[in-house]
Amino acid sequence: MRITSAQMTLDLQAASGDVLCLGEALVDMICERHVASLDEADMFVPHFGGAVANVALLAARAGARTALAGGVGDDSWGRWLCDQLARAGVSLRHFRLIPEMRTPLALSTVDAAGEASYTLYGESIATVVHALWGTVEEAVQGSAALFISSNTLVGEAERQITMKAREHALAQGRPVIFDPNLRMHRWNSRTDAAASVNACVPGALLVRTNAQEARLMTGEEDLDRAALAIRKAGARNVVITDGPRGAILRGKIRLDVPGVPARVVSTIGAGDALTATLIARLQITGFYEPAIAAALRQAMIVASEACERWGACD
Image 1 (spheres, one colour):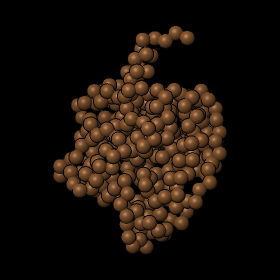
Image 2 (cartoon, one colour; image 1 turned 180 degrees about the vertical axis):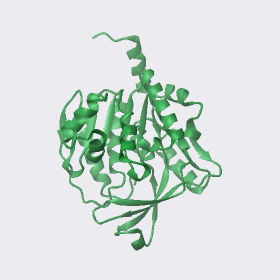
Image 3 (cartoon, helix red, strand yellow; image 1 turned 60 degrees about the vertical axis):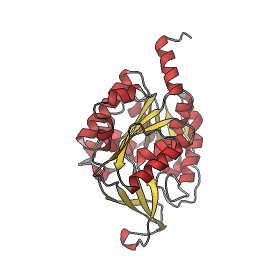
Image 4 (cartoon, helix red, strand yellow; image 1 turned 90 degrees about the vertical axis):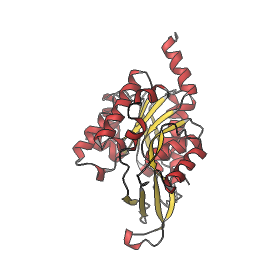
C-alpha cells in the first residue's frame, strides 16, 4: 500500500493535534430526586453541563486531546466551569470568559423513567461567535479534527461559524464528527431542523445519532434504512443508538451491539458519554475508522453507566 505525503501529514496531525469541539457549556442545576414537574422540585444541585462541553470533557478523561470553542459568563459559575474543563485536560485556547454575560443555568428535573426536562436561565449569546469570529480557519488548521452538533446551527451567526469550520475542515482533510443532538424546542419547525442537520452529513467521518433523530433526518422508520440514507448522503460511518435496544454501526464495518442494562437514575448526558467514547478512541488511534467498531461496545457500557448517576460528568 502506497502512502502519500498528504496522508502522512494528516496522520501526524491526528497523532499530535486535538479535536476541536464547537459548543456551549452551562451549569445543570439538577433536582436529585424523581419528580413529575418543576413544581415538585425542592432542591437543585449544580453539575457540569452543555452537550458539546460534556463530550469534550468526557473524551479528555478517556485519554483524548480535545479543545472547546465557546464561552461562558465572566462570573463565578463561568470560572467554575472553566476549572472543571481545565482539570479534565480540555484546552481552553478557544474558550472565552465573556464580560456582561451571565453563565446559563438549566434547572433540570428528571421523571421516574429517567427522562429530563429543562428550564434555561440565561442565553449563550452566540459564544462560538465570540470564540472564533475571524479566526475559524486558524482554529481548524491547528486541530486534528472537528466535532460539531446542531446546537450551534440554530442562530444565524453561530450557524455561519459552524458551517465555515466544517467546510474548512473538509477542505484541509480534517475528520469531521457530527452528533445532531437535536433539541426540538429550539427550532421553528421539524423541516428546518432536518434540513440544517442534513447539511452537516456530507463528508463526515462519523455521524452519531439516536433513533428519533435518524428518523427525522431521513423519514425512514427502519433504522437500517435510515443509516443507509445517511451514508448515501455522504457520511462514511453512521452509528444509531436506540436506548436499551442497543446500537448499530453502518460503514466500512457493519456491527450490531446490544443494549447494556442499567438501573436508570437519569438519562442526562448518556448520549454525550457514548459520543465522547467514540471520539476518544478515534483520536487516540489517529482516526482509524475500524476503531469505531472496536469502541462501540465500550461506548454502550459507558452510556449505561452514565444513566446510573444524576449528571453527565459526575
